Length: 187
Image (cartoon, rainbow, N blue to C red; front, side, top):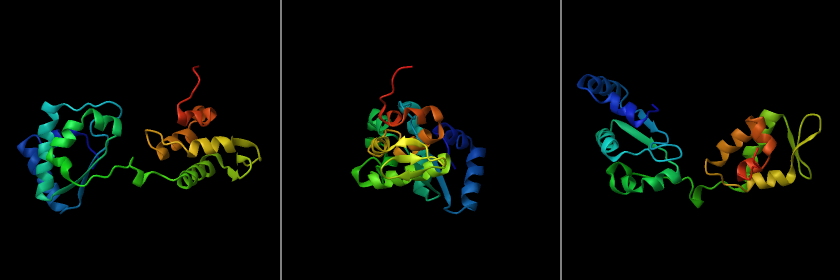
C-alpha cells in the first residue's frame, strides 16, 4: 500500500479503524508492505515534529509486531532538512539504503542502456557510434556529444526518471543535454 503519513494516521486513528486494519493485516499474514514515497516532501521538508512523531511511533509499533514492512523514500535534500528525526527516531534505526551513494551510482554504460531503451521505444531511433541517435528516416535527432553529456549527468531526481521525462516530453527533448544539466536558456 502506498500511503502518506496523514493517510496512515487516518487509518489508525479510531478504535473501529484500528480493528479493521488489524483484521486486514492479520488475514494477509506478513505480506503487507507500506510505501511512504517522499515521506517528508519532494523538494522541501514538510516534517512537523508535533504532528508526525506520534504517527511515526504508531508505524514503529506495527513494525515491531511483525505485521508490516515499511519502505520509506526520501530525497537527499529533504533528508538534510530534517536530519534530526532520522538521527533520533527509532523507526529509522533499521536497514538503510542510500541510492545516491557511490555503491549504487549508475555507470555510464548503464545510463547508455537506459537512454537507448527509451530512445528505441519512444523515438523509434537507433544509435550510430559516430553520429548519435537517428530516427527511422536516418535523420540525426540526438548528437553523439549530447549523448555523452547526458550519460555523464547525475541529476538530483535520479537518472532514470529524468531521462524518462526528457525522452517523453518534446519540450525537454529539444533542450538536449541542457535539460539534464540545468543550463537552459531563459525563454
